[in-house]
Image (cartoon, rainbow, N blue to C red):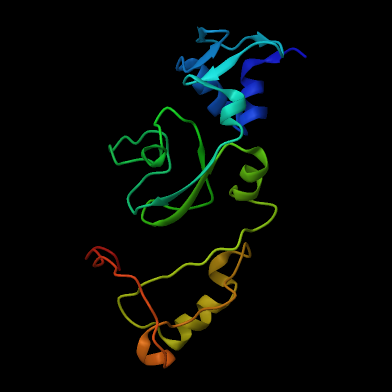
Length: 189
């Protein structure tokens, strides 16, 4: 049935109203081959594209990419840092990052518009996806610091680690493969 253009973008791509309206206002949405700069009423038969890609195509996309440290998870960055869009196979594709990965972190990043995946990977997901993190520290933490990490305190009751394990070779008595890591910057405490 009839609905507003931004509402269609929201329902098909799992966007919030602000992002959907921004795509329209930036002339990135076409309806039946005509650029839309303002919101409008649409019907089911209208052909809608975002950056030239049909909504049906975008709504089924999911990508897994390695996010290097220093890549911003925003569409644009005022400091001209690289963004997650550079990790997509085509920069015209629209796929949003899932999960709380900060600027300084590196690792596996899921990018998708599939609403069910977006619900799982949001800031307050219904189900927490299992994650494994390897953290390199400048110095060995004290017993108190380890006990604190193993408690729920630093995680604000959202999640907590199931296992905290020291994987240095001398502590575990077996060969552990650890990847080569770049040196830590001096400004990280």
